[in-house]
Amino acid sequence: MRHAISVLACCLLPVCLPAETHTIQADKFYNSFDHRHPVLARIKAGDTVNTKTQDAGGYGQNGQRGGERGNPLTGPFFVEGAAPGDALVIRFSRIRMNRNYGFTRYRMGTYAVTPESMEGIYPGSYKKGLVDPNRDDIVRWDIDLNRKTVRLNEPKSRVHPLEFPADPMLGCVGVAAPGVFAPTSGISGNYGGNMDYNRITEGSAVMLPVFHPGGLIFIGDGHALQGDGETLGTGVETSMDVTFTVEVKKGVRLPGPRLETADAIVAIASQPEFASSLDRAFRMATSDMVDWLVADYKMEAWAAHMLIGTQARYDVITAAGSMGLRLPKSVLPKR
Image (cartoon, rainbow, N blue to C red; front, side):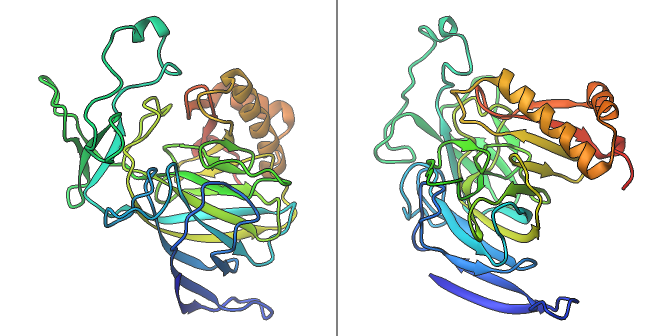
């Protein structure tokens, strides 16, 4: 591991150490949100981290394999002073694609369409070795880093170029899961995890509960672009350059992940994708948003119900998985 540090600014409180910027390149990646993994770096509240992530197949910026499929994670980052019962706020100031290709699966899964519509539609395999020498179920997308676009390399549609503006995001953002639970980097839960939420983009802030000393932050699974629901089972998977800062909120006991963007707040009902009840996720997200409005915005419970009932937008984050309840900031009470 290479780890360079430069001092940026001083904390105004006399007991605080200066905030620092850390440039960190991992040489080992993990496939679970496990508190027993060796710490990659120790950071303080207010510090900034510059790092990189591998794609979902374990390939990095230069196309070399550095991790194991699927979703190898960069981390864990130990946040000094973070203790169980606290919350971490991870603010992403930079999420940038750093190579000229990505990949998706060739076909949606039965979690996204009715079984009868899949019957005889087209094979799940295409060509072996297009992206990974051992796989025939994924296809290559070309990434133009200057134009910030993605375009399907092959097969070619007769009627659509399948070229779109990129919208880089992180699929995996989480902390070490509670107890001795060591969930894989393929699922999500109250610790965050493989949430695959396409609003976790540059400029957003993810809030997570802390279950172990230091919180132990992991990130990974960058997507150049992904539609709602992650119906292909992937986004346009690629490696990323990531910059984030972290804040510790003492004694804030979150039930699960929350998200803040430039124009909205989102209560995330985080569950394993492709295998969970969206009805349950709907209720989880709604319940958490009520608690959020009452605790942080000082609304009466009945007023929170009225606000949600008239202004809520529900995002299907992953098919048969997670949902988000999104409220525009323009309708929130002033704080």
